[in-house]
Image 1 (tube, rainbow, N blue to C red):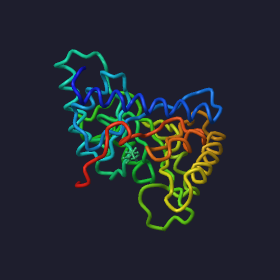
Image 2 (cartoon, rainbow, N blue to C red):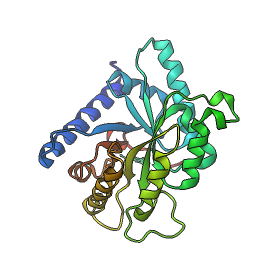
Image 3 (cartoon, rainbow, N blue to C red):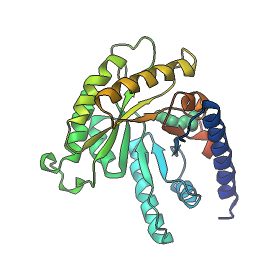
Image 4 (tube, helix red, strand yellow):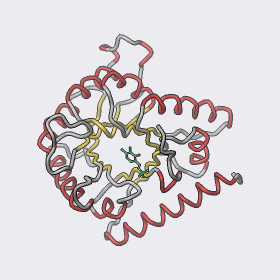
Length: 251
Ligand SMILES: *Cc1c(COP(=O)(O)O)cnc(C)c1O
C-alpha cells in the first residue's frame, strides 16, 4: 500500500470524492452518485491498487483492452487472495461483433445506441441462441441507452441514439431476455454548456421512467463536468484522468 503510485491514486481519489461531496451539497441532493473509475490506458496493476483503496466500479471503452485487463485483474486477485471483485462497465462505442466478448466481463453496458446492438447483446446473453457454449454468462447485463445530446444529430451518427429513438430502443432492451434496462448515458455535447445538455438528459430520463420506473440510472459526468452532471441528477459519474492522471496521447 505504500508505493508512490498507490499514494498518488489515494490522494486523487480523496480529491475527487471531496469534489463530488461539494457538488452534491451545492445541488441539495440527499443521495450521492456512484463513482465509476475509467481505467482505459492504465494497467491492471492500477486496478488492483484501486480495489485495495475501496473502488469497485471500473469503466473501459475498448473490448480488446478491457477483456485482457479484466482477465489479468482476476489472475492478480487470485494471487493476492483478495476477496473483492471489480464490477466492469463498458462505456465506449461497441461493435455488434464484440458483444459476445463484452458480456463475459462487463455487467453494465453504458453505450447501447442502436437496435442491431441490442439484438447482438441479447444473443450473447441468451444461451439457447448462443452457438458458443463458453459464453455462459451469469446474470442479466444492465444496459443504458446512450443518447447523443447534440442539438443536430447527423443521420449516420455513431456514439449515441437520437433523443427521439430512446423510447423504442428502451422497449427493445426491456423485452430482451438476458438484458435489463438500467437507464440513460450521455457525454456532454461540445457545442453548448454541459448543464444545458445534461438538463435535456434529465428530462429524457424523467420520460423514460414513466414507462420503465426501474430504469433510473443516469450515467453522466466526466472529469470536466462533474458539477453540472451532479446538479442534473447523475447517478453514475465516469471519471478517468482526475483519478489516474493524464493518458498518453498516442493510441
Ligand atoms: C474516457 C471516458 C471517460 C472518462 O473521461 P475523463 O475525462 O478521463 O474523466 C468517461 N466516459 C467515457 C465514455 C470515456 O470514454
